[in-house]
Length: 422
Figure 1 (cartoon, rainbow, N blue to C red):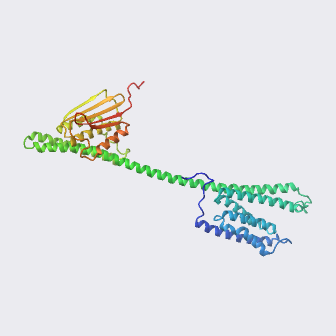
Figure 2: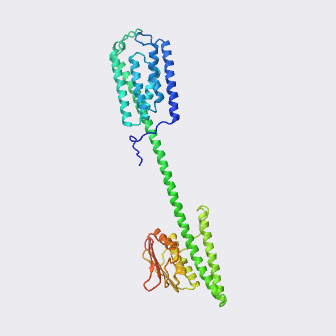
C-alpha cells in the first residue's frame, strides 16, 4: 500500500540525463570560480601577507565548487564537502566568495530537495547552518580590530553592534531561504508523484469499471436474446409440429398453425430489431421503443393457447403504476416460465396469475406437466429470472408442486403511491 507521508516517501534518484547535466554544471561552476579568482587577484584583493600561493587558492576554489557535479547523486556528501571547503578556504585567507557562496547555497538546497532520508537531510543542513553561524561569530571575535577601525575617508568609527547585526541578518536570510526552498522543492515533487500515482489508480479503476460494465452489458444482452428468441422459437416449433400433424387431416388447423408460426417469427424479428437498434444507438440519437411490459402478459397466454395448452390467466388486486424496468422484468419472467412449460413440461394446462398486493407484485405460473423448468435445457432461463428478480430486490421460488406439475412464483416489491398525494 502506498504511503502519502512526505517524510516516509523516497524520491526516485536522478535520471541519466540529470546526472550528465550535473557533471557539466559542476565543471562549469568550477571553471567560473577559477576565472573569478584570477579576476579578483588582478583587482588586488589577495595581495596580502596572509594569502596563500596561487596553487592553493585554485585548489580551494575547485574543491568548493566541483563537487556540485555529484550533487543529486550524493547530496549529503556534497553538502558536507562544500561546507567544509568553504570554511577552510576562509581560514586560509583564500575565500573566492563570488562563486563559492552560490555553490554552498546550491549544495544546501540540493540536500533539501534530494536528500533520501528526510530526518538526516534536515539534521545535516541544520548542523551546517549552525557551524556557519559559529564561524561567523568566531570571525567577528578574531577580526574585532578590523571591524572597528576608523574609516580613513570619513574619520568615523563604525558601531560594532551594527556590523555584527547586519552580518547575522544577511546570513539568516541567506540560509533560511536556501533551507526553505529545498524543502519546498521536495514537497512539490512529492505532490507531483502523488498526483501521478492517483492518476494511475484512477485509470486502473476506470478500466476495471469499464470491464465490469462490458460484462454486465454482455449478461444483459445474453438474457434479452435468450428471452426473446427462446420463447418465440419454442412457440413456433410447437405450432410447426401441430401443422405437420394436421396438414393432411385438418388443413384449416394447419393454416391456423402456420399463421401462428408466421406471427411468432415476425414478432421475434421485430423484438430483435428493436433490441439491437437500442444497443447500436445512443440515447441522444434514438428514443428507444417501449419494451414489453406487464400489460402484454395476455399475449403470452394467447400464444400458449395457440400452442395447444389450456390456459387460465387472471389479474387480481388493484393494478398499480409500475416502473418500466419492473414491468418489463415481470413480462420476461412470465414469458420465460411459459417457454419452459412449452419446451420441457409436456403439460396440458397452464395457470398464469398476476397479483397486486400491498407494495408487492406477485407472478405465479404453474402447469400440470411432468418436466422441470430447466429439464433438458441449459438453465439459462432460471439464471435470467434470478437476475431480474435480484435487480428489483425480489424473491423467486420454483419447483415441483405436490399434486404434480411445476410452479414459478416471483415477488417484486414496488413503491406504492396510493394515498401519498396531498
